[in-house]
Amino acid sequence: MIPEEILRKIHLIHIRTKHLVNDIMAGEYESAFRGRGMEFEEVREYLPGDDVRTIDWNVTARMGKPYIKLFREERELIVMLLVDISASGQFGTVKKLKKEVAAEVAALLAYTAIRNNDKVGLILFSDHVEKYVPPKKARGHGWRVIREILSFEPQGRQTDIAQALDYLGRVVRKRCICFLLSDFRASGFEKPLRLSNRRHDVIAVPISDPREYELPKVGFIEMEDAETGRDMLVDTNDRLFCKRYEEIRRKEEEELQRLFRSMDLDSVSLSTHVSYVEPLLAFFRRREKRL
Image (cartoon, rainbow, N blue to C red; front, side, top):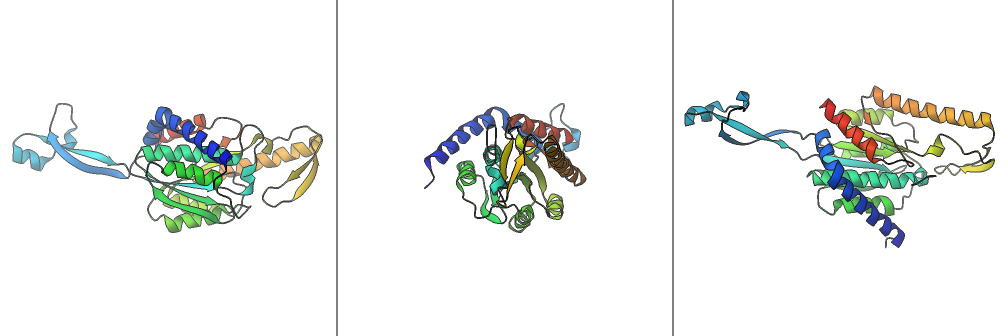
């Protein structure tokens, strides 16, 4: 049984994402992600303004007047959502937890893809793959994606992105669009990420919280690493400590973005304290310009 609180969250996300898909996202997504190619559909008589390169000369010779070939885009794509559900996703200090942002974004992407007749699959992972939902495009599939992300209780606490990417390579043989939603608090994933990006179209979606970059000035606080359980007592009024903390986190972020650029891998950074809609729209528009 799913707790009533989780059911309410699922219902709210369903309503919110459905509105965004219908009013904003669907057209942007379709423009940003093209189909696999063009498929012949039919011929029709040539009209002034038609591209002469599409003239079907065999039909034209047979009919005694020009005819052109019409094609349609082979639209159906496979979209895989790789969602980090490790313990660090339970962190959030402003509006939402990182896990909740991941759930809403994954739901939005799922509904948008399904509306565009694409298949959507889901891989939930911590320090191992926790759940695999094969790609489908049924109407209720987006609802299942939200439900699994919000209600699934992971066995692992830590993060192994490399294992999730290896699993993706085994279960999805065709080229797919892969959204990797995580806080990227992990190591050893560089090589698997590079290999996956060669085979698939991988988009990294780092999710962070403001307090991961700047500590509040509230004196002594006990900090716990959500994934390892280690405790640490720190003085947030210690300017040298806070400065060092912020420098380390900024450096980690810069190195992550540098890694993405070195792989020519698309990314869109999100935070728990601001809307994810504008960053996603900006990302879709950048993609469209490159096509």
